[in-house]
View 1 (cartoon, rainbow, N blue to C red):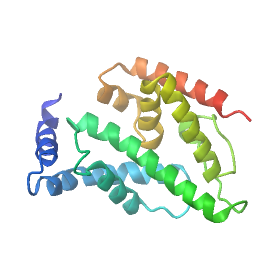
View 2 (cartoon, helix red, strand yellow; view 1 turned 180 degrees about the vertical axis):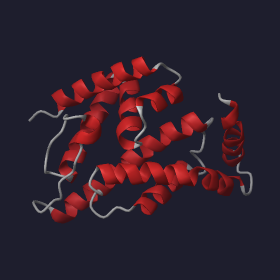
View 3 (cartoon, rainbow, N blue to C red; view 1 turned 135 degrees about the horizontal axis):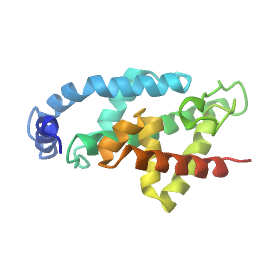
View 4 (cartoon, one colour; view 1 turned 45 degrees about the horizontal axis):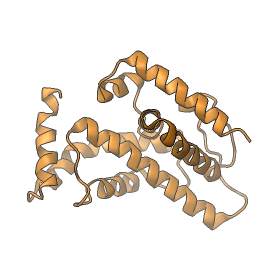
Length: 190
């Protein structure tokens, strides 16, 4: 663990034990970075209908710090978990929107910036749900590849940042990303 992460790790552990005020401090420390991640995700996905950055950050944080589930050990673990949580929120929101609209008029969802051509579709929310289903399938094959996709696509981390968070090399992350993209490409074929 990096020494710069020690205060955050201490705060997360205090919050996990239910220490009064620790959760508020965690939120204050992490809010700017969570907001930046959420904004980047929503912008790259065409806004995901009407989901707003602030709503995504707040909902993510609420889910992340559910008193019974806050068992993260540090910055790395927190942001890995944040990526998964944002994925779940975005997919849940897409399902709600799809259920409300049933059949047409769905906005285009641009997935090409980070999945580099893996998905090109105008099906918006339906495409996002297909990607989530493919990720669930990938998770049964290789959970680490799913984690890399979540961090890269849903949290917007670069390969360098992912390598740092996972404690591996950039080259390893790049290979994992390529494997995951190949799996998704096959899974998402009609």
